[in-house]
Amino acid sequence: PSNTLLATSLCADELARVLEDEFVSIYGNNFNLGGLSGFPFAGNTGWGAMSAHVPDNGYCLTIHGPHVGITKEGQIGKVERSGIALVDNCCGSAIAASNYLKGITDGSANINPRIQQFTDFQQGAV
Image 1 (cartoon, one colour):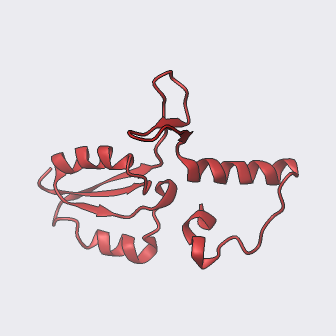
Image 2 (spheres, one colour):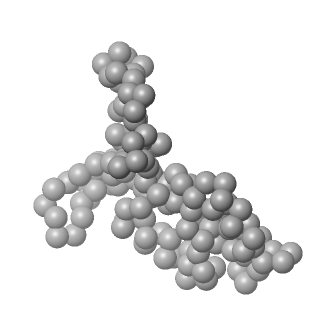
């Protein structure tokens, strides 16, 4: 681990921090590339910066992905959060993107050419 840079692209949700923290405890510092749904929103600039931080003759371990909730009853795609009664979608961003694509495919949703508005850039890109 001492010659390996950890780079994560996990969802921004606080639930993903548990996994990220476990990797950090093994590999040390983390170069965070991610955003909603675990997409690497750092782009070419971020990947280039991360590449420059890989130890000489070392490695980069990249962990990527959204989080997927599972309730106590075993329901996949839902999550129970401490202190919140609502059992909610998890990963909500990935589910919203999937539902939008399904709607385009089955004709129930309109293609929105303005989907990448600055105020919700990450979700528009997902």
